[in-house]
Amino acid sequence: MAGAALSVRNLTKKFAAGGATVTAVDDVSFDVAGGEFFTMLGPSGCGKTTTLRVIAGLEQATSGRILQDGRDFMAMPPQRRNIGMVFQSYALFPHLTIFENVAYGLRLRALDVREANRRIAAILALLQLEPYRERHPAELSGGQQQRVSIARALVYEPSMLLLDEPLANLDAKLRLLMREEIRALQRRLGITTLYVTHDQEEATAVSDRLAVFDHGRLIQLGTPEEIYTQPQSLFVADFIGRANFLPARLANPVTGAGGAVLGSGASVRPARRMRLPANEMARLAGADDGIVMIRPEHLVLDAIAGDIACRVLRMQLLGGLIRYTVECAALPDPVQVETTRPLPGIGEGTGAWLTIPPADAVLYHR
View 1 (cartoon, rainbow, N blue to C red):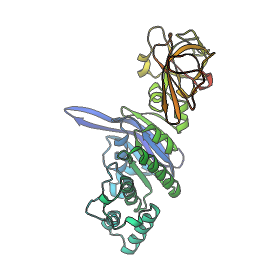
View 2: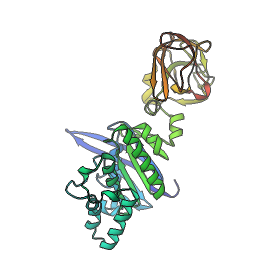
View 3: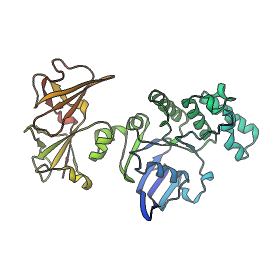
View 4: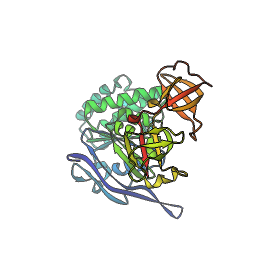
């Protein structure tokens, strides 16, 4: 990426564990543009936090390169990398006031007192923490403590902000509020931000781009829309949002063109086709040589007509949507359909018809 603020090249990190070697990060490469909100997303143990810690200088890479604005980041000690780091645990000093917590790092750097006080006042005002400056961390809510942690990271005026699962300790409602605050703050400051989370909804809501990790490897890189609508593997399709996977036989096994036939005999011609990654070939069973992926909100469920006969097993009201779980005699697993309102004539135990819109389906094939 031209003009990248951060370039990670072939980054590998190995640990010794019980006489064996564990590869936590496996040949990872990506670029982050200046001012971009870039999120590393994946399940626990996938390598995303280790990658962030290597960038921060808290872990030493086994091999690879990290460049910031063309400078060799790995040749610099952590204190010279000019980054702000926000941890999941807040890591505040309980015996210090909010003002003193934010000031701590500046005092270690022996910054001029007048300049330090100016920066502290500005960041406390920006994060709406000024009324709490003389309180101690235990006197604040979880969201306010996380703001203090962010203020302490930003008061250095860093060139890059790193956040490691910053909202994991907050309740669901506060997490939603804080993620919007973090995104709004990042946009206002225009600071390059690397964010780590296992929460796919959180990641897609705040990010300019996502890097999806699994088993130490970067599996897919793209905008939230690209990754949601064009997942390059079954793992990504399943991890980002909800997905139905329907076994299929290709109309043309050589090219994958011409669509596929489902077990019900229904034909579907997905608008997008992708080769199945080698490590996911085991998902194909028997004579099947393809898998059709369709999101629950894209399926059409009708009481009168459609492509596949089915029966409704379960109807769930989930806030702003309704989830129907249906079974089809010719499909091995139940299928989920999501709508924003109840469907006329369809309820638990009723028969219905399922239709797969080709424009919204993805065919994975050998």
